[in-house]
Image (tube, rainbow, N blue to C red; front, top):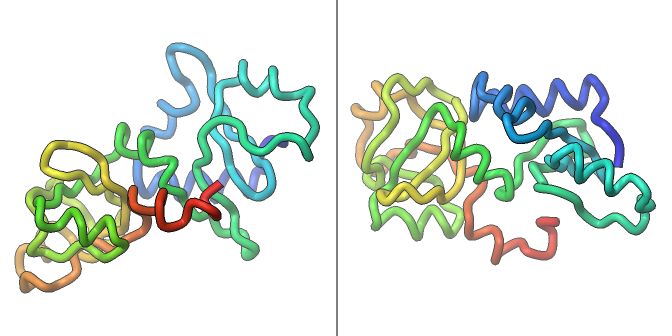
Length: 180
């Protein structure tokens, strides 16, 4: 387990900025205790500094995971967010989309969100911005990228894609062997 390099930190923060904007500060400078990001086998983990210090004596081969896995770096150097980061993304998300009950299952099976399934949308959401998808009871289901802005979404037919699927809670079952 090692700290992220400057390039890795930049790529991670650019990805997080798409979803939570300037709220990244709340992830690092927490009032209870400081938190940090660490890299272990191409996976980025988010943990308190106290836990990080206690895990220092554990060898790299023996350490499987520590903290919350936010995602992994691909071989090309891009960062891919995992569904395990959803609690933090939903807490600090700038743009949110609420889906109707008839749209929950299609999204949880890995499909994009169509306009007919949308119940509410955050105002002034731009196109190609990271969004967190909730059900109508404010339970976070996953996250994605907006296919259209809020203004353009009103003009689209009901079968038009409104949010591109990135990750959903159904991944815990579909990809449990590769998630961690």
